[in-house]
Every structure is written in structure tokens, then in C-alpha cells.
Length: 392
Image 1 (tube, one colour):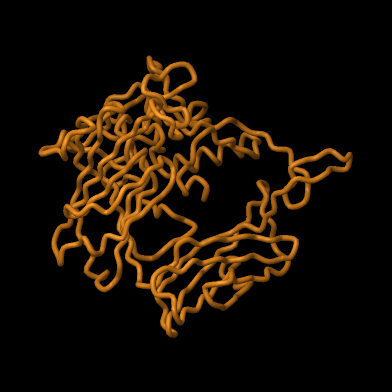
Image 2: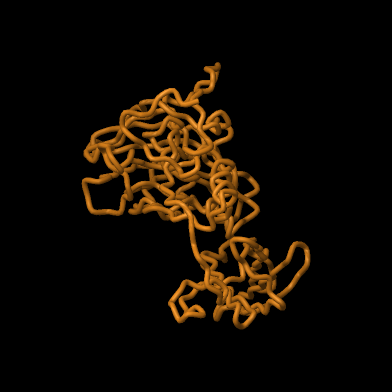
């Protein structure tokens, strides 16, 4: 049931509006955090809480075993852009939901003349001793300056891409550590990419997203570690190339890559971290929208014969190209065959989370319903989604 529509339109994820809306807000409880009053909430909003704010591993194509999710309640303050760091906080915000969203618990706009500050404390697990600690952000819109224990680590500009900092040297010997994040977002008052976000929504332009809108997490890495991992399938030659860029200490390093079909090993290769490794995939199962088969991939880094890093990933054996059909017309080819694409224009906005889906299940639902309705395409409209959307 939809009680009423917002007076300032917020665009929705394609199928959320069609099939997933509920006009009911969760009943108040004794919890300190509650969603801010919103004109339209999805049915997944009832599953959102500080303890369950996107708890899934956020980087499915390069998974490490050890990590610490920093989603949850952070302190926040909205101050003038030129003001010093806040001496006190306005309240708490639920990360990773943007400050303008109902699910953040705040639902306040931030202008181009203001700055949004975040703060929280954390403890480094004792088992991570001796490893480097990296602080990862899935996405923050737009200009982000990060400090740990008062030491500024750097500034990132860009609202859609992941970034990280090595925070090891800023950590105290023990006890609680503190993170401060300062964000400035000009939205549509400047020339940076901002999609369909505007400060004054109307017509086909929608509510702004400011600040953290994807998962924040910590992970420990060895002095020799992989980042990034690039996977390039080649169906014509029945193989896949694996490029594992090794950082840190790179002498005496060996890479092993193993491709699996379920529990069955189908290919294995060893070598140095450059050039790329080549895995031969016999009788490869090709990926398509109708048969979306994925191979698992394990990549291991050894230095002086000792395992120092391991990541798990996946890949599809598929090829996208332009070519002629039987009538000589240029078509888009999938796996060397013409493929007619049809599907919705997917804005990627959610009425309760704006850029951020309420839950991982909501992300998955959108894609599953797109397929059930007979489409083989989602045209993502001037937005880059979290990695887990592409995973699903």
C-alpha cells in the first residue's frame, strides 16, 4: 500500500516501484536508532538495523578471509564548509546510508556550502598483529578526507569508485582507535560527475546523495599482497588470463591460480607476478544471460615459499564484440552470436536509501525480477553500483 508520493520526486530502482514497495514504517521500538520519517519505504526497510547494515563481504571478486565491517552507527555533524572540525556531534547516522536518506536515521540535506563529518571508534583484532591494516571505502560522494587518531591519511575525489588507505602507521599500540571522515559534495553546483542528483529535485532529476553510501571495512594484509586482480577471458582460445598485481615486497614471489567448477579443479597455473598467468579451460562453459555459469578462482601468493596472501574470486567465460549477422548487419555479439538486448532503464535510486539499497537481498531481488519479467538487460543510468550488484 502506498500512502502518498513524495512532494519532491525521488527516482526508484526499476523494479522496486513495480513490485517491492510497502507504505508501512516499522513500528517504533526501544532502540536508539530509527529510520527517519520517509514518505515511502520499501519492504526491506524492516530488516535494516545498526547490527545488520549491509553485513555482507563487499568485494566479491577479491575476497579475503579476515576483515572487519565498520558499517553501523557513526557520529555525524553538518557544519560550514570552511569551519574547523566539529567540537560536538549532531547525533548518530547509520552507515552506509547517505545522510539525505530515511534509512540513515538523519534525512537532512547538505549544501555545497557545508561539510559533513563522520566519527567512530574501533579496535583492531589481536589476531591481526604483524600485518598491515587497510581501511576500505566502497564509495563516498564526493571529496573525502580521512584521518585516524588525528593523523590525516589523504583525500579522495570521486563519488562512485572504491578507495583505501594503509592506516597501520597511524594506529596506537592498543585500545580504541578513532576514525574521522570529512566530506564535501557540490552535487549539481560543480562539474564533477553526479548523475541525476540535484540539490533541488524535480522532474527527472532526483534527490542528492552525500557522504558514505557503500560499505566501510578494515582488512589485514601481509607486506606482500594483491591489489588489483584482473581477469580476462578468451573463449576463442579456451583460456583466461589472470593478472595479479603484487604490492609491497615483490622479490622471490610466486603466484598460483586455480580455476574450479564447483569442487572440481579445471585448470591450474604457476608463475611470477608478471607477466599474466594463463589458465587453459577445457570445454569451457560459456556465460550468457540464460546460462550464467561462473567459475570459481583461487589466487595464492607465496614469498620465499611461504603463503603470504590468498584471495578468492570468480569469472565467466564470455566474449562481447561487434560483428555481422547473416544479413550483413552489424550487431552486438555475445560469444560470437548476435544477441538482441532488451530491458529497463534502471535508475538505481531507492525511496528509503536513495543510492544505497536497504539490504543485499533487495539488490538481488531487483536483478532476479528483471530476469523473471523476461529481460536480459539492465541499462544502469548514470550510476555505478556497489560490487555486490554486479555479483548478483
